[in-house]
View 1 (spheres, one colour):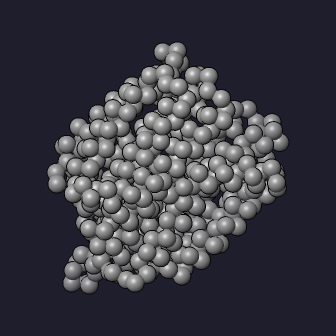
View 2 (spheres, one colour):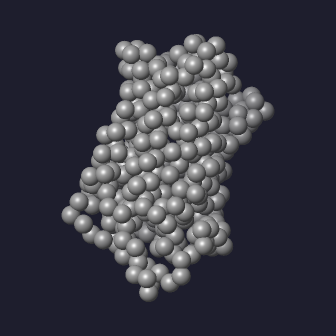
Length: 394
C-alpha cells in the first residue's frame, strides 16, 4: 500500500493544493461577472453567453476519470502544475479572442485543465495526512469551491470596471504563475509502494473498474449526486427565487454572498466538528444530509428578507459540511494504489448533477409556474441521499 508520510510542511502542502483547486473555480466563475460585457461586444444572445460556462463544465467533466488514472500512475505534483499553467494560459488567451467561437475553444481548454486538479490534490493530501486527519485536511481543500466563487464575485466587477473584460481575463490568467510556484515549492509526490507490495503493474483502467464494481462506492456516488444537485441548486436559483419574493438587489446579493462565506467556514470546520461529535464520515453524512432536507422544506415558506438571510447562512454552513466526508469515504473504500481514480470517479458522478440540475429544475419551474418546487426537490434529493448512505457499509 502507499504509505502516508507525516512531513513538517504538510500544512504548506495543503495550502498549495487548496490554492490550486480554488484557482480552478476562480477561472470558472470569473466569466459570470464579465458575461454581459462579453455579450455586448460580440452581440451574443443568452444561450450563446451561457455556452461559455457550459464549455468549461464539459471540459471539466470529461477529464475527471482520466485525471485520476494519470494521478495514480505518474506525478500528481507535475499534473497540478501543468493543469494550473494551462488553465492560466487559456484564461489569458480569453483576453485576445476575435470571435465567439474562439472563446468557446479557450473555455473548453480551461475546463479540461481544471478537471485534473481535484483528484491530484486528494492524492497528495492522502499521502501526507494520516487517515484520522484527512477529514480536516479535505474539509479545507473542499472550501475551495465557495472560496473561488466568492473571489470571482468580489474581483470580477472590480477588474471589469477598472480594466475592462479582456484585461480581467488576462489578470486571472497571470495569477496562475503564483499558484504554480506554491505547488513547486511546497508539494512532494506521494511515495510509491515497494515493488514487492505493488505486484504487477495494474492495467490503465483497473482503478475505474474497481470503483464501478464496488457497491459501497456506487451507493456513495449516488448520494454524492443528490448532494451536488442540492448544493449547486441554491446558488443557481436563489437570485431568481428572492426576486420573485420582491427582495431588493442588495438583499439578494447579500443572501448569495453570505451563503458562500458560510459554506467556506462550514467546509473548513467539517472535519473538526465530526471529530468533536465523535462521528465517523458515514454517521456525519447521515446527520447533515437529513438536516439539509429539513432546511429545504423550511425555505419553502415566504420569509421576510432578514429571516431568509439567517436561514440561508445556516443552510450554506450545513451544505458544505458533507463534501470532505464524501471524499474521505471514497478514498477509504479504494485500494490505495487507485485512490486518485476513486476520488475522480466519485467526483464525476457529483459534477454531472451540477450540469443537469439547471435544466431539470428549469423544466420544473416552467411546469409548475413557481419556484417552491426547488425546495421540495432539494428535500427529496437529500432523503434519497440518506437512503443511499444507509446502504453503504462502515
